[in-house]
Length: 175
Image (cartoon, rainbow, N blue to C red; front, side):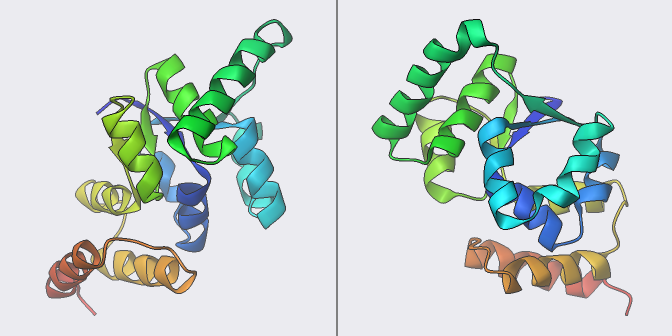
């Protein structure tokens, strides 16, 4: 996988809801969000938790120079309309393409168009949990609790994949 990732709003929210934002950085990925994603996070109040990571450089904020703003805007609007995804989601795809990054998203439609139409590598929150478990940054008990919190907050994740992981993790958990 690319060592650079662009996160969409849903994954950032999942990391916040699962209390995984800080531990995410133990994976060592260069992490980006776009201005449009930051704007969505401000509306949902999660930005207050993300901002310190932008300020300390652990999250890079993709900003568009004035000289490139019109072509960028046209590209993002075109992706948004053609792919029927939000402006923020389209901005994440454009950013991932521009910097050669993988895309982290929890949005099924965005995942499909990013993989099939734009040929991007795409991962989600379940992959993040798997990776954190693999490097032992989380215990299985914490992973179960985090996933429960993410689901309780309304994340729509693939039911069969969630059930399979929970069953596996519960067998390995030391309560």
